[in-house]
Amino acid sequence: MHRQVARDVLARPDERRSTLEIGAGTLNQLPYEPDVGPYDIVEPFVDLYSGSPSLPRIRNAWSDISQVPDQAIYDRITSVATLEHICNLPEVVARLGLRLSLTGGFRAAIPSEGTPLWALGWRLTTGLEFRLKHGLDYGLLMRHEHVNTAGEIRDVLRFFFGQIDCRVFGLARSISLYHFYACSNPAIDRCNEYLQRLQRTASALA
Image 1 (cartoon, rainbow, N blue to C red):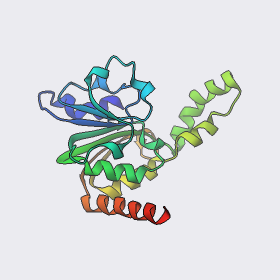
Image 2 (image 1 turned 45 degrees about the vertical axis):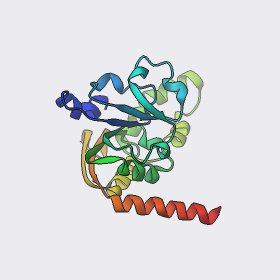
Image 3 (image 1 turned 45 degrees about the horizontal axis):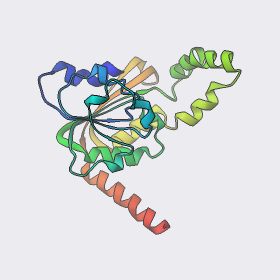
Image 4 (image 1 turned 180 degrees about the horizontal axis):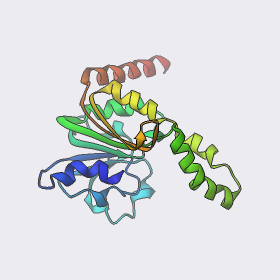
């Protein structure tokens, strides 16, 4: 997943590009990313990256994408194994669509949550190890952690982007372990309209 997300900059390491990573975690994507320009992150759990040796490469760090300034525009926005965890996924995708340059792209890798092969994969690996070690059902944890299926994520991306390229690690989307998406041409009007609707709803409920 990490190499697939970084493939665009790995193919052209001499081209300067700015990047915003959503859900940077422990900064484990950075070893795959050549230093081609400013690298900003969104990560709510500061403790995950505070001791990382890659921290000097980070220009700005925010805990929520709503904190990214309107004037901050990126050539690339990336995400690795994050979208399946986000409860307000449409809002986050709408906001990142507005942070892309006209020629920019959103590159995201996700597990194939909701597909039979993915379910079988974690049950025979992490799920089995978790039950042997703790005597507990790992599936219960997964149901709380992975709040979006791969199909739901695909629908959100289709709603906010005009161009989507999908590749899978497997035979097909329904028989795979991971999905990779390269998205471009964000629907700016649709992103703005969705965020304005959220704001009106929040004001009405206040």
